[in-house]
Image 1 (cartoon, rainbow, N blue to C red):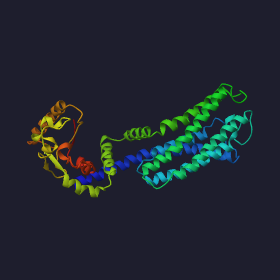
Image 2: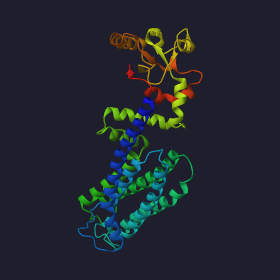
Image 3: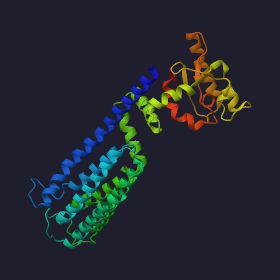
Length: 365
């Protein structure tokens, strides 16, 4: 019952941590969207927007909002990913309409449909970018199909990254040419050109860095550490391990209980921690283990088999001596090579989080 309570508590801690991180990202996305969307809608409808300026980064805010929202999606959330497809198509249409309606944006003249001194160049840029967003809006529904959520997430993010990259490259190229006097009539102010270049760089960063799979994972990990206790993070790790398999926690518990074993410290040898199996092999080490009830094992032993055994053995002996002095008996340990059937490793791996919860402490060498 205590192990089941531990797992339930770990799952609750993981849900709270996930809600905290995702809630923060979605709040940021909504804030940028609220900031950037109304001026574009008003401009597309040729309605006045108070204080509007060609330097107001309306569509830039939408790009940041979309990036934050995509970072909030996790590869196991099928419904959220499906909703992400709908939102991505809608935002692609909005961005395409915005670039068609706001052709004066790049000239610095106005946010309404019309001409400027550099109409030919700016209109070509706007229409090309609009075409890329139309392509994304068309591609996204075609890419959606019934498949594992992580595949759908990858197919959702790929076209978004592609259209942001196209937008960024075109902006950087256009404003670099304006700066060098190769495009338009050379009347672009240095400040306006600098803002345009920074806009292109922002889009390229979102496409190549922010939405990269590893960067998204690192960002979520970093955000989860903010304001979270060590116990909450450890519980979240245990819960995530439980969710990786095909079995529910209710199915894992009896399976783990039937396969849970431990080895007494006084039956371990230094060579048992070596990277290569000793003369006894895995079977000889397993023969020294004994069945154990969940919650009765003193320590879950965590270490790297690539590390030399001498310092690991010294650290383990030091801990075991302190334990025996306090408890009056040698500790029982869970050691993967000893306590997992080496001929059926795959069958025991789903039970690993239950094995962790079934030990009184986690001992890291």
